[in-house]
Length: 487
Image (cartoon, rainbow, N blue to C red; front, top):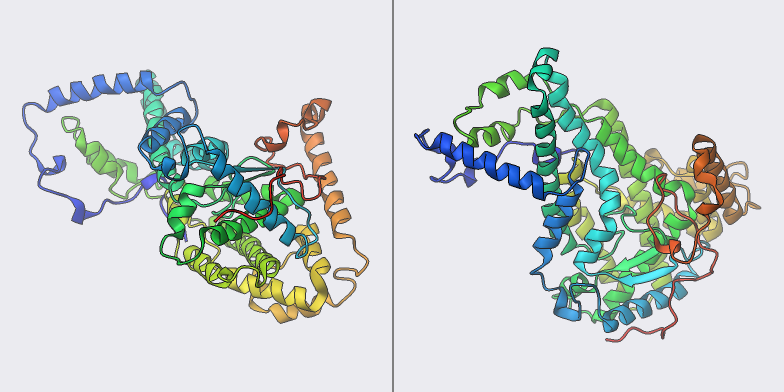
């Protein structure tokens, strides 16, 4: 289901009060207030950074970090600059143990070369590049609707004013993004909780402060919760690192949905009639009236269905693999599994924030069906054939297969569907090489020797193509501490 992005929708009439500016008559001080507003606007434009584009990401980062300055990151040893040694050690130990268990549950090797404990502030800083990729198409479509609707004469007459309006729009989007990221940073548990690879490539990240808050009321040892979440994060990283097409496909589908956003520009005439130049509040009233609410197109519905299916397959695979890896090692594992399923199904803070920013609900509605399908395939054909399906997108189950998992499992018995002698890892490597060759042909400058990863590049963000470099370091999770997290 799609929603208006960046809050473009009608306000809640129940939240209006007697002091609402729109309820007050225009007084003689209206023009003085307008002058003060323009003066403050000039100051804001000069202080908002030099970020260009449809969203002011400098301002978004400033607002997010400012909102988090009073958070309780220090509750379990966090400081404003990151995590304490105790928290980092607990996270690395939990991840190391989880990786050992996962080795027996999947043929995909460890995908993380670095395991880190993030504060909420670190989460904002490390995931902002991916948010930029996701939010830019939305903001471009929404803000572009204004320009497209203006006659050429009006554009020429407006002149420099259009540039200022563009800056104002970028600041408005940046402000909303910053506030949303600050809220999300205090709720998210891992870097992959929303189902997308938001963090740097090959980096497994957990947020201990948020995990501790999540653990309250579960009546489970915090060490069990930490190991369980570390296993989920590690399983996600194995997919994103060793299935070369997956990361790009997920992010590109979100971008495709965003690029399809359209605004009914015929409503602009009605919108203009609602604006009273003497009443600055009327501008906000008009913007939030719903007249500019984006319309969902058939192409967007197709992209949304494809995205929901991919998310369900990812989350279902992670659910099954983690359950098989942990088995009965953690007494509370099944209860945790169900808790996280409900958290995703009901739309937790992560999904709600994503819906606000990008305009769609990032929810794997069919995760249980996908989980049942992966479990059935593994039981019938083994984990080699199950995980081998990730070697190429054409082999993956479809939305229709989620409706009929038995038929899909039966088709896999046909050797022409997926040969028994198929080497899934070799096939994944071939697919990765083909995609890299295609990218090199499209952008020859990107294939220079400088692209070879260094020791520092292993945990850096993905390149512009969104591609991860898989690790050949076995279970290389960047950990050498003990195998049991402390309680």
